Amino acid sequence: MSETRTALVVGASRGLGLGLAAELRRRGWNVIATVRDEAGARRLSTEAPGVRVERLDITEAAAVADLRRKLDGEAFDLVFVNAGISPPGRGDAAQVSLDQAATVFVTNAIAPARLARLFLGRLRQPNGVVAFMSSGLGSVADNTHGYSELYSASKAALNSLSRSLAATLGGRRITVLAIAPGWVRTDMGGAGAPLSVEESVRGIVDVLEARAGSGRHGFVDHRGRELPW
Image 1 (cartoon, helix red, strand yellow):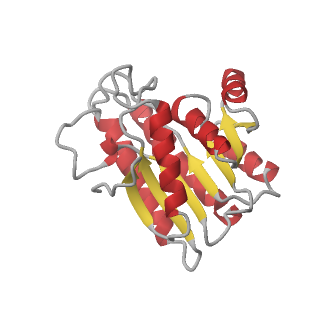
Image 2 (cartoon, one colour):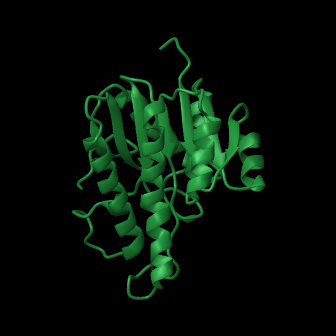
Image 3 (cartoon, helix red, strand yellow):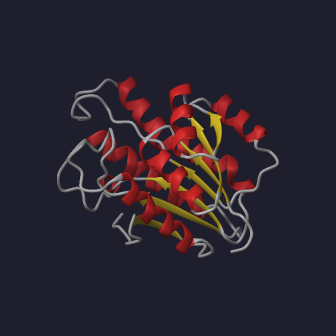
Protein backbone atom coordinates (compact mmCIF):
# COMPACT_ATOMS: atom_id res chain seq x y z
CA MET A 1 0.00 0.00 0.00
CA SER A 2 1.67 3.21 -1.16
CA GLU A 3 -0.23 5.68 1.00
CA THR A 4 1.06 5.97 4.54
CA ARG A 5 -1.38 4.41 6.99
CA THR A 6 -2.29 6.19 10.21
CA ALA A 7 -3.07 4.56 13.54
CA LEU A 8 -4.41 5.81 16.84
CA VAL A 9 -3.20 3.59 19.69
CA VAL A 10 -4.95 4.31 22.96
CA GLY A 11 -3.09 3.13 26.06
CA ALA A 12 0.56 3.03 25.00
CA SER A 13 2.33 3.91 28.23
CA ARG A 14 3.94 0.48 28.63
CA GLY A 15 3.63 -3.21 27.86
CA LEU A 16 1.53 -4.29 24.91
CA GLY A 17 0.28 -0.82 24.00
CA LEU A 18 3.80 0.58 23.88
CA GLY A 19 5.01 -2.46 21.95
CA LEU A 20 2.15 -2.13 19.48
CA ALA A 21 2.88 1.55 18.80
CA ALA A 22 6.56 0.73 18.26
CA GLU A 23 5.81 -2.20 15.91
CA LEU A 24 3.40 -0.15 13.80
CA ARG A 25 6.00 2.61 13.54
CA ARG A 26 8.66 0.10 12.48
CA ARG A 27 6.36 -0.97 9.66
CA GLY A 28 6.05 2.58 8.39
CA TRP A 29 2.75 3.58 9.93
CA ASN A 30 2.10 7.12 11.07
CA VAL A 31 1.23 6.58 14.76
CA ILE A 32 -0.55 8.76 17.31
CA ALA A 33 -0.49 7.15 20.75
CA THR A 34 -1.93 8.12 24.11
CA VAL A 35 -0.41 7.87 27.57
CA ARG A 36 -1.69 8.80 30.99
CA ASP A 37 1.38 10.50 32.49
CA GLU A 38 4.80 11.97 31.87
CA ALA A 39 6.60 8.71 32.65
CA GLY A 40 4.60 6.99 29.93
CA ALA A 41 5.37 9.79 27.50
CA ARG A 42 9.10 9.42 28.15
CA ARG A 43 8.99 5.65 27.63
CA LEU A 44 7.02 6.01 24.42
CA SER A 45 9.32 8.70 23.01
CA THR A 46 12.38 6.60 23.83
CA GLU A 47 11.16 3.20 22.63
CA ALA A 48 9.00 4.34 19.70
CA PRO A 49 10.68 7.42 18.21
CA GLY A 50 8.57 9.26 15.70
CA VAL A 51 5.29 8.50 17.41
CA ARG A 52 3.11 11.51 18.23
CA VAL A 53 2.26 11.43 21.93
CA GLU A 54 -1.01 12.65 23.43
CA ARG A 55 -2.23 12.52 27.04
CA LEU A 56 -5.46 10.71 27.88
CA ASP A 57 -7.29 9.01 30.71
CA ILE A 58 -9.78 6.85 28.84
CA THR A 59 -12.24 6.90 31.76
CA GLU A 60 -12.61 10.71 31.61
CA ALA A 61 -15.28 11.56 29.06
CA ALA A 62 -14.19 15.20 28.78
CA ALA A 63 -10.60 14.14 28.04
CA VAL A 64 -11.76 11.75 25.32
CA ALA A 65 -13.89 14.49 23.75
CA ASP A 66 -10.91 16.87 23.89
CA LEU A 67 -8.71 14.33 22.13
CA ARG A 68 -11.31 13.88 19.41
CA ARG A 69 -11.37 17.64 18.84
CA LYS A 70 -7.58 17.84 18.86
CA LEU A 71 -7.41 15.14 16.17
CA ASP A 72 -10.18 16.70 14.11
CA GLY A 73 -8.13 16.82 10.92
CA GLU A 74 -6.90 13.23 11.10
CA ALA A 75 -8.24 10.21 9.22
CA PHE A 76 -7.33 6.78 10.57
CA ASP A 77 -6.78 3.35 9.12
CA LEU A 78 -6.66 1.85 12.60
CA VAL A 79 -8.07 2.79 15.99
CA PHE A 80 -6.70 0.35 18.57
CA VAL A 81 -7.97 0.62 22.14
CA ASN A 82 -5.74 -1.01 24.73
CA ALA A 83 -7.12 -0.68 28.25
CA GLY A 84 -7.06 -3.16 31.07
CA ILE A 85 -6.77 -3.25 34.85
CA SER A 86 -7.02 -6.17 37.23
CA PRO A 87 -9.22 -6.11 40.32
CA PRO A 88 -7.49 -6.41 43.68
CA GLY A 89 -6.79 -9.79 45.21
CA ARG A 90 -8.00 -12.80 43.28
CA GLY A 91 -10.68 -10.79 41.50
CA ASP A 92 -13.55 -12.82 42.93
CA ALA A 93 -16.89 -11.05 42.58
CA ALA A 94 -17.73 -11.74 46.23
CA GLN A 95 -14.50 -10.25 47.56
CA VAL A 96 -14.27 -6.78 46.01
CA SER A 97 -16.33 -3.70 46.68
CA LEU A 98 -18.96 -2.55 44.22
CA ASP A 99 -16.86 0.53 43.49
CA GLN A 100 -13.85 -1.63 42.66
CA ALA A 101 -15.96 -3.84 40.42
CA ALA A 102 -17.42 -0.81 38.65
CA THR A 103 -13.94 0.61 38.00
CA VAL A 104 -12.84 -2.64 36.36
CA PHE A 105 -15.87 -2.76 34.06
CA VAL A 106 -15.71 0.91 33.13
CA THR A 107 -11.98 0.78 32.35
CA ASN A 108 -11.92 -2.58 30.58
CA ALA A 109 -15.19 -2.47 28.66
CA ILE A 110 -17.38 0.64 28.78
CA ALA A 111 -14.74 3.32 28.23
CA PRO A 112 -13.05 1.50 25.29
CA ALA A 113 -16.38 1.00 23.54
CA ARG A 114 -17.38 4.64 24.04
CA LEU A 115 -14.09 5.92 22.67
CA ALA A 116 -14.31 3.67 19.62
CA ARG A 117 -17.77 4.97 18.79
CA LEU A 118 -16.51 8.56 18.97
CA PHE A 119 -13.82 7.84 16.39
CA LEU A 120 -15.85 5.72 13.96
CA GLY A 121 -16.42 8.68 11.69
CA ARG A 122 -12.67 9.23 11.38
CA LEU A 123 -11.92 5.77 9.95
CA ARG A 124 -11.11 5.40 6.29
CA GLN A 125 -13.22 2.97 4.29
CA PRO A 126 -13.05 0.21 3.17
CA ASN A 127 -9.82 -0.70 5.00
CA GLY A 128 -10.44 0.92 8.39
CA VAL A 129 -10.10 -1.26 11.48
CA VAL A 130 -11.33 -0.79 15.04
CA ALA A 131 -9.57 -3.16 17.40
CA PHE A 132 -9.82 -3.80 21.13
CA MET A 133 -7.23 -5.53 23.31
CA SER A 134 -9.24 -8.40 24.68
CA SER A 135 -8.08 -11.59 26.39
CA GLY A 136 -8.51 -15.32 26.11
CA LEU A 137 -10.02 -15.00 29.58
CA GLY A 138 -12.90 -13.15 27.93
CA SER A 139 -14.13 -16.35 26.29
CA VAL A 140 -17.28 -17.55 28.07
CA ALA A 141 -17.16 -20.90 26.29
CA ASP A 142 -13.58 -21.55 27.43
CA ASN A 143 -14.14 -20.49 31.03
CA THR A 144 -13.68 -23.79 32.80
CA HIS A 145 -11.27 -22.40 35.41
CA GLY A 146 -13.07 -19.55 37.18
CA TYR A 147 -9.81 -17.58 37.25
CA SER A 148 -10.09 -13.84 38.06
CA GLU A 149 -13.85 -13.68 37.71
CA LEU A 150 -14.21 -9.93 37.35
CA TYR A 151 -11.37 -9.46 34.87
CA SER A 152 -12.70 -12.33 32.75
CA ALA A 153 -16.23 -10.94 32.90
CA SER A 154 -15.06 -7.45 31.96
CA LYS A 155 -13.28 -8.76 28.87
CA ALA A 156 -16.34 -10.83 27.96
CA ALA A 157 -18.33 -7.60 28.24
CA LEU A 158 -15.82 -5.87 25.97
CA ASN A 159 -16.23 -8.66 23.42
CA SER A 160 -20.00 -8.27 23.55
CA LEU A 161 -19.73 -4.50 23.12
CA SER A 162 -17.44 -4.99 20.13
CA ARG A 163 -20.14 -7.22 18.60
CA SER A 164 -22.75 -4.52 19.24
CA LEU A 165 -20.49 -1.93 17.63
CA ALA A 166 -20.10 -4.09 14.53
CA ALA A 167 -23.84 -4.68 14.37
CA THR A 168 -24.58 -0.94 14.26
CA LEU A 169 -22.20 -0.04 11.41
CA GLY A 170 -24.91 -0.23 8.78
CA GLY A 171 -23.36 0.14 5.34
CA ARG A 172 -20.01 1.39 6.61
CA ARG A 173 -17.16 -0.87 5.54
CA ILE A 174 -15.17 -1.11 8.77
CA THR A 175 -13.55 -4.19 10.33
CA VAL A 176 -14.06 -4.69 14.08
CA LEU A 177 -11.76 -7.01 16.03
CA ALA A 178 -11.39 -8.13 19.63
CA ILE A 179 -7.84 -9.46 19.88
CA ALA A 180 -6.41 -11.73 22.56
CA PRO A 181 -2.65 -11.12 22.73
CA GLY A 182 -1.76 -14.43 24.37
CA TRP A 183 -0.09 -14.84 27.74
CA VAL A 184 2.58 -12.15 27.59
CA ARG A 185 5.44 -11.14 29.89
CA THR A 186 4.05 -7.80 31.08
CA ASP A 187 3.30 -6.31 34.49
CA MET A 188 -0.08 -8.02 34.30
CA GLY A 189 1.02 -11.26 32.65
CA GLY A 190 4.01 -11.82 34.92
CA ALA A 191 7.58 -12.95 34.32
CA GLY A 192 6.60 -16.59 33.73
CA ALA A 193 4.48 -15.93 30.64
CA PRO A 194 5.67 -17.72 27.49
CA LEU A 195 5.36 -14.78 25.06
CA SER A 196 7.46 -11.63 24.85
CA VAL A 197 5.78 -8.32 24.07
CA GLU A 198 7.62 -8.24 20.74
CA GLU A 199 6.36 -11.68 19.71
CA SER A 200 2.79 -10.83 20.61
CA VAL A 201 2.62 -7.44 18.89
CA ARG A 202 4.25 -8.74 15.70
CA GLY A 203 1.45 -11.26 15.48
CA ILE A 204 -1.20 -8.68 16.33
CA VAL A 205 -0.06 -6.30 13.60
CA ASP A 206 0.07 -9.18 11.11
CA VAL A 207 -3.57 -9.91 11.99
CA LEU A 208 -4.58 -6.25 11.71
CA GLU A 209 -2.99 -5.89 8.29
CA ALA A 210 -4.39 -9.19 7.01
CA ARG A 211 -7.95 -8.47 8.17
CA ALA A 212 -8.12 -4.85 6.95
CA GLY A 213 -10.80 -4.52 4.30
CA SER A 214 -12.64 -7.67 5.29
CA GLY A 215 -15.48 -5.75 6.93
CA ARG A 216 -15.89 -8.65 9.36
CA HIS A 217 -16.19 -8.80 13.11
CA GLY A 218 -14.05 -11.33 14.94
CA PHE A 219 -12.64 -12.49 18.27
CA VAL A 220 -9.17 -13.71 17.38
CA ASP A 221 -5.79 -14.35 18.97
CA HIS A 222 -2.40 -12.90 18.02
CA ARG A 223 -1.97 -15.63 15.41
CA GLY A 224 -5.28 -14.82 13.74
CA ARG A 225 -7.09 -17.91 15.02
CA GLU A 226 -10.80 -17.51 15.74
CA LEU A 227 -11.58 -17.90 19.43
CA PRO A 228 -14.82 -19.24 20.96
CA TRP A 229 -17.08 -16.59 22.34
